[in-house]
Length: 323
View 1 (cartoon, one colour):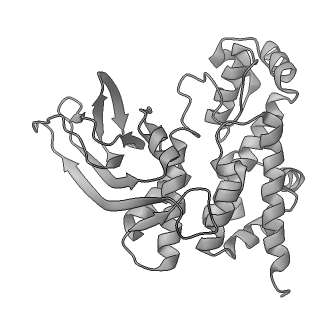
View 2 (cartoon, rainbow, N blue to C red):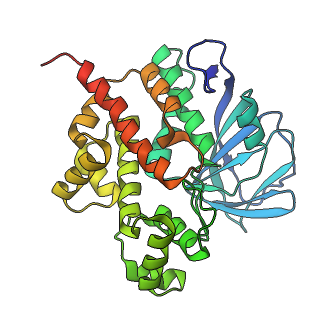
């Protein structure tokens, strides 16, 4: 099965990812495990239990809800923790996109699977071999998005920096704030808790962050919450109330006001337009906008990309016939 990737959306000769197999495996406690290499790239999702992923002399503990990448033709070891069994889903890929191939040949710490990522993986697992154009296109979008997360949206375990913003020239404290916000935006948020966790006075953190970036910590927090709401609407058309809860908003009116201000149209209208998209249209939009798929960029460009994304979706809405 070939999945179209790359930046060229005008030709069928664009670079591709080939999804060769998808399987589920049960790993029994006490079984003998040997290091081996794959002829393909691999994604392994830990469905239950816990294990140790060993590569190039480094051991990564992985547990239920983690996803990790196996580079091509390099030996690795996946073994149980103590006497535990564990279950995995495994995805075998060939990557022909030169830039993506280069990136995925590096080693990345495991990703923690959030609800959006889990839904993407579930869809691929269920429909990867369904030979409809709709399914093929949508699986392609999800595979590309998941692979990109390893070097774009990777989890900041030590809150040491931003996955989205270029932080050259920023203080270490500001980098830690970026990482903390990006890892905790969906939870009840407290500046005091952030300061306590990062080991700084909250007033100092707010002051230095504002000086380095030109925006407040809470402004960036709300940006990340709205960005994640866009992910839910764009990929899944998730219900407004559910999205609001998942990204950390208690107030419907505040969420609606902020979404319209940041994106350019209300969340209900945005969701309606996203629901009307075909898989092919979604693929084109996904590739042509920087908000969801780009690497770290200057903060002002990141904020502008949200408006640009909103303008693209507004155009989709305006093309729809009046009811």
